[in-house]
Image (cartoon, rainbow, N blue to C red):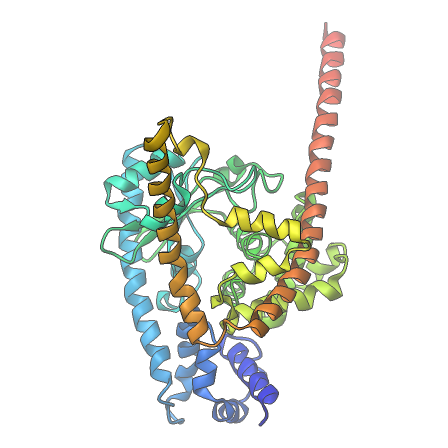
Length: 459
């Protein structure tokens, strides 16, 4: 079996173990596939966040198939995930209680809700952190409450960013994780969603008004309603992360859709068009259906306009997913992203933005020698923090053979093509948002005039 055939067999097996085409593969075909795969290579090119699901998929074959020695890595990953998720749920309880006592409502998002409500067992869904949503204007207060519980921003976050409550841009909130001291527990506190204003024309208050209570195996928390949860997962994977999170978000979508049968697909399609995210929803759900077998009906895609350049978007998005899946995402992204820029001017701008420069307000007003010493001390501190956080990543990439000119150029070419296509979608989304605002603005005066006319007639 040549390298291309081997990679094809590994992908086929992975998708089968994740639920795709399981019904189409009888035991004989599955056993043959299991024996064909080079397991060391399979594990090295499969994202670790899928190890628990792969272990779960292998369990039916343990009774009549000799386990490969590499399988123990998969089962160990599931055991560790089970312990970690129990710890996260315990800390989630403490966090919710502290916020509630201070009068701050919160919603649990994404992984922790998925693990305890849609997966067959919580040990199958690894989580890097807990994601919480608090009302607009309450984020800084919520962070202070978490700090009283022992949470703090890691040193590299404080040094590199200095202001964890700032915004990345006019539309992107910066929400770095807080770490519980002497613990692997991380918590991110958000006040906006990837599917709400200002990114898409739907107010965050609407999401709060539709929120529901769910049971996380003995812990009752509030979260997004199912349809809002679907939009959040789709747009988090596509619009926000550009499909660079691998297959796990698609598995999340499949299990969320499997968890109920009363999805209003006509309403989901209508909302996608109204909110200007039809292309992202179309592309994400089509990939989820094609790769992991998510139950999305044809009627949903037929109700949406066919995305422009779909034949180009599909392979680019799929390549992003598989690149993340096979570990290329561990390659430091700065060099490929720098080369992916379209001109030397844009590369220079990206380089300057990447360097942790001191802002003028941080230098203070000390004149002369004192001011120079302060500048030197702060600059050295920033440089040290940058080196401490970046050098291990570059060393690991070099040691694993992924930090080479060929790989960097390949990643840069992939990023360049994906950036062009995804920016087109963002422009379409922005136009749809502006049109929605214009319609709302033009509709308001006419409604006021109608109300005024009715008042005159009544008078």
